[in-house]
Length: 246
Image 1: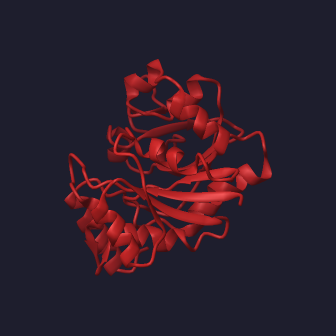
Image 2: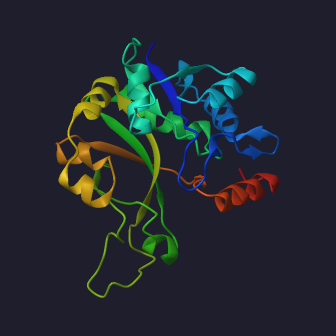
């Protein structure tokens, strides 16, 4: 088995409790994520990982594969690592359970570089930022990318910046989509490593890789997604799906 996809899903959320089970056109959100991920060509095994029996029962109810994990996992990344630790695989996918509009091609897109190049430890997705509001929004994580397609830095601040602090629509500004493909050994290293200074300052765990010399390959996508962090986000997703804009 080469590639295991894991959808970490928890019930508790400070901004939107129970969002994994939020109804979207007659299905819980986690089911939308699962069914879309199942269409990815590169995934050999797909699992939902949760510490909540309500989510466990819901996934079983729609016929999905699900495992219970420790309630002590501090992040979804740790939950993914716990699941794949004893599975014979090469690559682990961390598929956010709050991305009901993801496309399977997005997952294949971040797995393929790891299959093609054994020196790449991590791969993730970016998109071109085309509005000043996104550029300045601290909830939108920005990424600077080098000429070889690797991340140089992730920040909540507007990067790249300029002396006048003005918005330049021609600037190569990228936003980050939190879907990751990890080489198994890189993920297991990550969850036992100590948080790093820039990681703490930005509140972005992926900086732990960069600060320790690990490279993160980035793949640009044109597919629009809406991560569901609040009930308002859920309304936007339902509107988009109802309009057929997937």
